[in-house]
Image 1 (cartoon, rainbow, N blue to C red):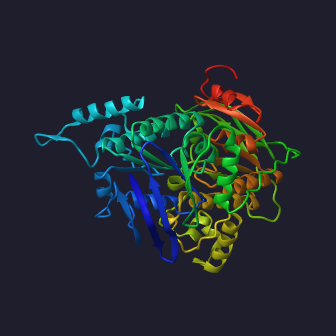
Image 2 (cartoon, rainbow, N blue to C red):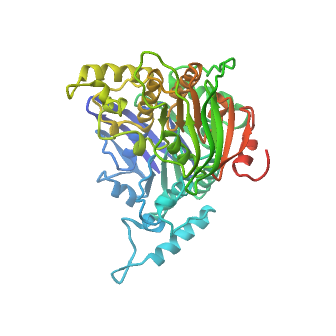
Image 3 (cartoon, one colour):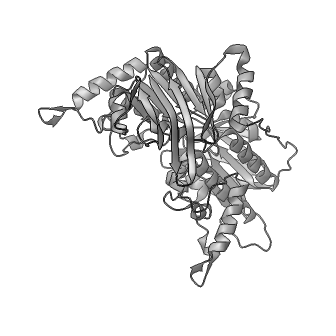
Length: 496
């Protein structure tokens, strides 16, 4: 159905994809995996006509795609759902679906016909869509389904999804894969880019591994059942070029006094009497279905929003001989909107908010900025150049910059580290490195709050897990709690 033949793509001096070939078959779910910057998104953007290859060709139904444009790819049945949703937030869901292919009757926009077609698509998928709601009011699960519906509205036969479950809870991810299997069963081809290897072996039919722009494992048929652990190990070794060191927990960590205190905090309709405490040196996880107050919790803790009622206290950490900064270091959930200036270079983003430290008589010291930025990025295993424009990096590499900047604030006196989805879109090796940084921060008596939809992540690093539902904590669980226990509490269906 889709064949990529010896594709090359260069960005300046960087050869992002080199002689990469891939065959996509109907009726199959095909996973494409690799570390950050391996070329996964670049390869599939060429398949969707978004990027033009420097060499090689894209064939659809054995015929070369000419001209090589997104419009031609759509016309011939290729649909792509990108990692960062391409939706117009003030428009309704229905308006987003028809954007660019608006149905017209007698010279007038015919949304009734579009609505009937979209409702039929949703029924086939076994889901529902709030078609009259503005996108800005929708949660990530609805946005994901909306993007898929938009591709199907254009009669896509090959559906490409870039990191589709990065922003979804475990339950939402399972529901999405059920939808994808239904699409494949109907004769479509489904391609999924993901860092979550457990999803690959559980839901995909075959896998292709990219490493540094080259195909290292081509269309490998996945065994099911008893061979799951062997599959995971072999795919991991192909991605990393060897084994990955497992995370080592430090359970003997000493805890100090209360460092973060939230008492009966109300904010709008999202936070409704939120109360919890985090001790110095403690790592506390927040689990919950997206849209239950997570974003507002981070805003209140970071000082971006003032609560309507209640008390928020972050105790400063004693740090002699250092100029103080704000006591909270934060990684927000949306790195592109809240954590980066995309059209600035990597150097400026690594030091964002700290340029005053490098100014003397109104002039910035570029050598000092470069030295500190390079040190931060090296620690985050981010080897790209400081002059690189941040927008050109993969989502995972953008996340490394945000994490590096937050971790650096610990040495500057931050007493609390608040991380919203810290490893979202990040490869396995980088995830392990981030988790080690979290443990190291706690060992320095920093209070750490980790908000994540990845339950395995919360179990790996947290001392306890708080479940957030409807803007308040409904239960506290140990990190040994099962997915089922945490899931029931997240939905507030019953006591775990």
